[in-house]
Image 1 (tube, rainbow, N blue to C red):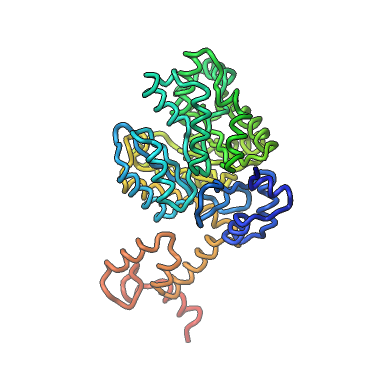
Image 2: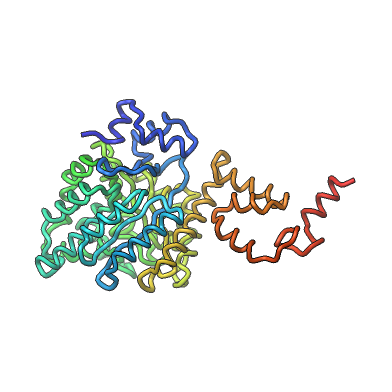
Amino acid sequence: MTTQMLEARKGHITEEMEIVAKKEGVSPEYIRDQVAVSHIVIPKNIHRDRSNICGIGAGLDVKVNSLMGTSSDRNDKEMEKRKLQLIEEAGADAFMDLSTGDDIDGMRAQSIASSNIAAGCVPVYQAAADAIEKHGSIVGMTAKEMLDTIEKQCQDGMDFMAIHSAYNFWVLDTLKKSGRLTNVVSRGGSFLTAWMHYNQKDNPLFTEFDTILEILKSTDTVLSIGDAIRPGCNWDSLDAPQVAGLMVAGDLAKRAIEAGVQVMIEGPGHVPLNHIATTMQLQKQLCHGVPYYILGFLATDVAPGYDNITGAIGGTFAGMYGADFLCNLTPAEHLGLPTEEDVVTGVRTARLAADCVNMLRRDSKSYKRSLNMAKARVADDPQAQIDNALFPELVKERMSAEPAHDHCAACSEGLCPADYSYQYFFGD
């Protein structure tokens, strides 16, 4: 049994490390050394064969994740297959299958088979859905059934998993005393709250954490410690329950690193701009510098229909302060289930946020592309503008809609500021 982390600690550079190093423009030795301490993770299940491999973490470009999956309200596997294709075409680095509809196993198999990017999931969703069918209620699921679901999904090829282990009676008690406005907004967290209350037992994903680590290690599945207690509004940001959950996550991250299991931390969704730097600093300090996977951040609570934009604003700030992995939001957030168009919009806006951060590295592809775009505009080179655009198909479509002419589409003939300034400085 070996993992990327254990190989790195032996001084070995794996094929996956080579691929990531080439993509990122850094040395394989840098990737190896950062993987060894889980400052970089490489989500790649040993049972899954794919060519598109990414690294997430310190010194690398910010990556983008998207969500898809069936539910009891929209149980259309073909639609989710199309969504996944669109997610990949839109440039996401990873996706999470959050299916809770019929035939979750079949949906997961379809998602893994039809994609070439990192695949994630939330095992407690399936465990809860299975418990309703088997026991008539979520609270009837057993600890063994939760662990069995994790193992099944690992063996099926999932590259990373959000597991809500950083939630226990101490965190729940902190929540009860806090006066929080939104209580528990995490779906997994709500399932476990009900289970703990009904069974009067602590969260099995916390008490059986060592067993979970052994399961994940067997397939080198990256552990994403799920944020079961994240604040559901800006008002609750950085309250006692959130910090308590982060402290538990830090302890668990340390145990995962010691066990040789790649680990990252899932972070809160609703964070006002003036809390973002502190949130990032706390996570990196308490959780030993492992990659931070954020759900947003939503910088305001009052823009339903535009949460993809508020999430991109917060995500840009978060990336600037050290976030490594952005989970996109769609315009349907807080309103309903996303359409195929919604998921494309969500990926594109999250990629825009990531690119704003990646551009800060002067040796990055984003920086060089931005520089080349400026040169293309001054040179009035439409094709170079298309080639260097983050979304070239949109630029090409808009340019094609303009009337044919020999000047820039942004200005009328004879009114180009670039031409005038060029003549002033460099003309005869």
